[in-house]
Image (tube, rainbow, N blue to C red; front, side, top):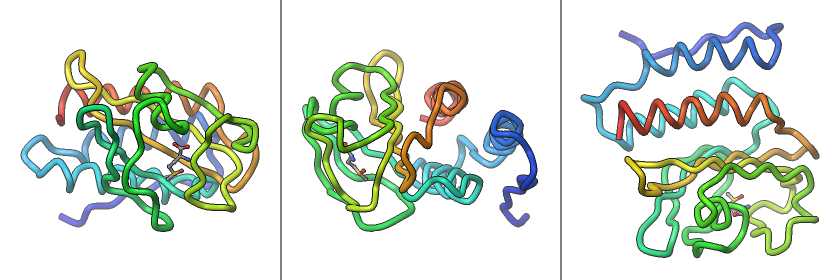
Length: 162
Ligand code: SME
Protein backbone atom coordinates (compact mmCIF):
# COMPACT_ATOMS: atom_id res chain seq x y z
CA UNK A 1 0.00 0.00 0.00
CA UNK A 2 1.26 3.45 -0.90
CA UNK A 3 1.95 5.60 2.13
CA UNK A 4 0.15 8.88 1.74
CA UNK A 5 -0.97 11.87 3.77
CA UNK A 6 -3.80 13.91 2.28
CA UNK A 7 -4.82 17.17 3.95
CA UNK A 8 -7.34 19.45 2.28
CA UNK A 9 -5.93 22.91 1.68
CA UNK A 10 -8.82 25.07 2.93
CA UNK A 11 -9.11 23.56 6.42
CA UNK A 12 -8.46 25.61 9.56
CA UNK A 13 -5.24 24.99 11.49
CA UNK A 14 -7.11 22.89 14.06
CA UNK A 15 -8.90 20.85 11.37
CA UNK A 16 -5.59 20.21 9.61
CA UNK A 17 -4.07 18.93 12.85
CA UNK A 18 -7.07 16.70 13.54
CA UNK A 19 -6.79 15.19 10.07
CA UNK A 20 -3.00 14.91 10.30
CA UNK A 21 -3.09 13.34 13.75
CA UNK A 22 -5.58 10.71 12.61
CA UNK A 23 -3.51 9.86 9.53
CA UNK A 24 -0.19 9.84 11.43
CA UNK A 25 -1.60 7.28 13.86
CA UNK A 26 -2.38 5.00 10.91
CA UNK A 27 0.92 5.69 9.13
CA UNK A 28 3.28 5.01 12.04
CA UNK A 29 3.63 1.36 12.97
CA UNK A 30 5.31 -0.21 15.93
CA UNK A 31 6.64 -2.97 13.64
CA UNK A 32 8.52 -0.50 11.44
CA UNK A 33 11.97 0.80 12.34
CA UNK A 34 11.94 3.89 14.56
CA UNK A 35 14.01 5.91 12.08
CA UNK A 36 11.52 5.06 9.31
CA UNK A 37 8.54 6.08 11.44
CA UNK A 38 10.08 9.34 12.62
CA UNK A 39 11.31 10.21 9.11
CA UNK A 40 7.78 9.82 7.79
CA UNK A 41 6.41 11.84 10.71
CA UNK A 42 8.58 14.90 10.00
CA UNK A 43 7.83 14.55 6.27
CA UNK A 44 4.09 14.51 7.07
CA UNK A 45 4.43 17.69 9.13
CA UNK A 46 6.50 19.50 6.50
CA UNK A 47 4.16 18.58 3.65
CA UNK A 48 1.05 19.59 5.65
CA UNK A 49 2.12 23.05 6.76
CA UNK A 50 3.63 25.51 4.31
CA UNK A 51 4.81 27.64 7.23
CA UNK A 52 7.34 24.96 8.25
CA UNK A 53 10.79 25.49 6.71
CA UNK A 54 12.54 22.81 8.78
CA UNK A 55 11.14 19.87 10.74
CA UNK A 56 13.20 17.31 12.55
CA UNK A 57 14.18 15.43 15.65
CA UNK A 58 17.16 15.74 17.94
CA UNK A 59 17.80 12.72 20.16
CA UNK A 60 19.17 12.85 23.71
CA UNK A 61 22.38 11.10 24.69
CA UNK A 62 23.82 12.07 28.06
CA UNK A 63 23.76 15.88 28.19
CA UNK A 64 23.79 16.19 24.44
CA UNK A 65 21.26 16.24 21.62
CA UNK A 66 22.25 14.85 18.24
CA UNK A 67 20.55 15.38 14.89
CA UNK A 68 17.97 12.82 13.87
CA UNK A 69 15.65 12.49 10.85
CA UNK A 70 14.67 15.84 9.40
CA UNK A 71 13.35 17.70 6.36
CA UNK A 72 14.93 21.00 5.38
CA UNK A 73 18.37 22.52 5.07
CA UNK A 74 21.41 20.84 6.64
CA UNK A 75 21.57 21.55 10.37
CA UNK A 76 23.90 21.49 13.37
CA UNK A 77 24.58 17.94 14.48
CA UNK A 78 25.08 18.42 18.24
CA UNK A 79 23.40 20.70 20.78
CA UNK A 80 24.19 20.66 24.49
CA UNK A 81 21.35 20.48 27.02
CA UNK A 82 20.58 24.06 28.08
CA UNK A 83 21.83 25.57 24.79
CA UNK A 84 19.60 27.00 22.08
CA UNK A 85 15.85 26.46 21.96
CA UNK A 86 16.26 22.69 21.56
CA UNK A 87 18.67 22.30 24.47
CA UNK A 88 16.51 24.52 26.68
CA UNK A 89 13.34 22.54 25.90
CA UNK A 90 15.20 19.29 26.64
CA UNK A 91 16.62 20.62 29.92
CA UNK A 92 13.35 22.15 31.11
CA UNK A 93 11.30 19.22 29.73
CA UNK A 94 8.69 21.52 28.27
CA UNK A 95 7.52 22.92 24.94
CA UNK A 96 9.00 26.27 23.96
CA UNK A 97 7.47 28.61 21.37
CA UNK A 98 9.75 31.37 20.09
CA UNK A 99 7.97 34.11 18.13
CA UNK A 100 11.21 35.87 17.16
CA UNK A 101 14.40 33.84 17.29
CA UNK A 102 16.47 37.04 17.40
CA UNK A 103 15.03 37.70 20.87
CA UNK A 104 15.78 34.24 22.29
CA UNK A 105 19.12 34.38 24.12
CA UNK A 106 21.55 31.84 22.72
CA UNK A 107 19.27 30.74 19.90
CA UNK A 108 21.37 28.55 17.61
CA UNK A 109 21.13 29.67 13.99
CA UNK A 110 21.16 26.70 11.65
CA UNK A 111 19.38 28.71 8.98
CA UNK A 112 19.85 32.48 8.72
CA UNK A 113 16.32 32.77 7.27
CA UNK A 114 14.66 31.22 10.35
CA UNK A 115 12.37 33.66 12.24
CA UNK A 116 10.33 31.56 14.67
CA UNK A 117 10.41 28.09 16.15
CA UNK A 118 8.60 25.54 18.31
CA UNK A 119 10.38 22.75 20.16
CA UNK A 120 8.42 19.91 21.79
CA UNK A 121 10.07 17.39 24.13
CA UNK A 122 9.71 13.68 23.44
CA UNK A 123 9.72 11.33 26.43
CA UNK A 124 10.24 7.62 26.82
CA UNK A 125 8.46 6.74 30.06
CA UNK A 126 9.71 9.57 32.27
CA UNK A 127 13.07 10.12 30.54
CA UNK A 128 13.73 12.73 27.92
CA UNK A 129 14.22 10.90 24.62
CA UNK A 130 14.72 13.93 22.38
CA UNK A 131 12.94 16.93 20.93
CA UNK A 132 10.83 17.71 17.88
CA UNK A 133 11.97 21.00 16.34
CA UNK A 134 9.97 23.00 13.80
CA UNK A 135 11.26 26.22 12.21
CA UNK A 136 9.59 28.86 10.09
CA UNK A 137 10.86 31.74 8.00
CA UNK A 138 7.86 33.80 9.26
CA UNK A 139 7.69 35.50 12.65
CA UNK A 140 5.18 34.05 15.19
CA UNK A 141 4.38 31.06 13.00
CA UNK A 142 3.49 28.75 15.91
CA UNK A 143 0.82 29.10 18.58
CA UNK A 144 -1.04 27.18 21.30
CA UNK A 145 -2.92 25.10 18.70
CA UNK A 146 0.38 23.88 17.24
CA UNK A 147 1.61 23.15 20.78
CA UNK A 148 -1.54 21.18 21.69
CA UNK A 149 -1.49 18.88 18.67
CA UNK A 150 2.28 18.49 18.37
CA UNK A 151 2.40 17.46 22.05
CA UNK A 152 -0.51 15.08 21.47
CA UNK A 153 1.29 13.41 18.53
CA UNK A 154 4.57 13.24 20.49
CA UNK A 155 2.69 11.50 23.32
CA UNK A 156 1.33 9.02 20.78
CA UNK A 157 4.90 8.38 19.56
CA UNK A 158 6.13 8.01 23.16
CA UNK A 159 3.42 5.56 24.13
CA UNK A 160 2.96 3.54 20.93
CA UNK A 161 6.11 3.81 18.82
CA UNK A 162 9.24 4.26 20.98
N1 SME B 1 17.45 26.72 16.31
C1 SME B 1 17.70 25.53 17.08
C2 SME B 1 18.81 24.71 16.49
C3 SME B 1 18.37 23.66 15.58
S1 SME B 1 17.87 24.21 14.09
O1 SME B 1 16.88 25.24 14.14
C4 SME B 1 17.48 23.00 13.05
C5 SME B 1 18.01 25.90 18.51
O2 SME B 1 18.19 27.07 18.83
O3 SME B 1 18.08 25.00 19.34
